[in-house]
Image (cartoon, rainbow, N blue to C red; front, top):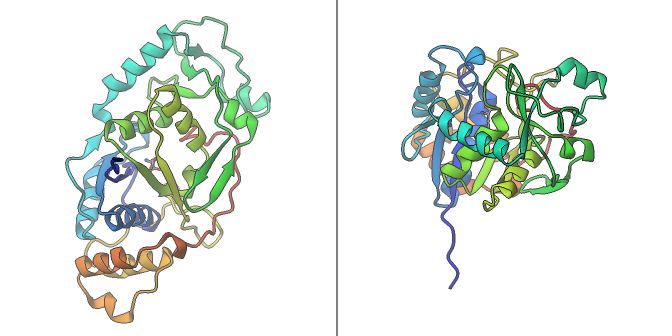
Length: 300
Ligand code: GLU
């Protein structure tokens, strides 16, 4: 008899500012996909990078999710409380020569063509002020996305030894996200298409750790009029906590559904129930042009 694994999904905001329409789409899409599968939906606060955080944003995000009726299951995981787990994994890789210290600057890597060429792999550098990179011995050259289909990853990107702890001592996003998704038992990752790029690295980490891999669904990205991703960095406006219905309806439309006009005057709960009943991956617009380029500074 085969056992069907219970679906566990998540929304993992970084508290660098209040929720904007782009992050509402990621929250709602991951929520609807989990609930349509009778699954669990967790929230994890990715407070990994204090200099980029805004005081009070983590609580503000949670209050906003509540105002939108997006109730999460279980407790919130905070990455700021997970440092021991990240550090223990890094030490084990250092002990097994699977990771190494690197002193190269971003400028040097840019000059070398944008991809890190493994300069410090065999230098046996010590920790002083240096970043830590993972040796990528088995690059992940492709993966399947539930919306975008088969995605090929250019070899120089796939083969790059990537940073798992930054020179300023902060843990890298790719490491934290995979260790946390494993710890929380996540079976499917639903998030914005801007995170397609690091996905190959994350799959590589699952394989290195001998863990079962997860499904990926990268949602279409909300962009500004001039084509930039809506983000806290480009000051996307916060969504309204006092009257959540218009933004909720707009997010439902953005995800390819066509709600009846009178749904806008229903409760957030009824709007979400309508969304769960009408959620279908085949409705999602596949608008994102996928270009995989050298590491994104925050997600490298
Ligand atoms: N914390 C990331 C962000 O807000 C999302 C991470 C993820 O969903 O894997 O961009």
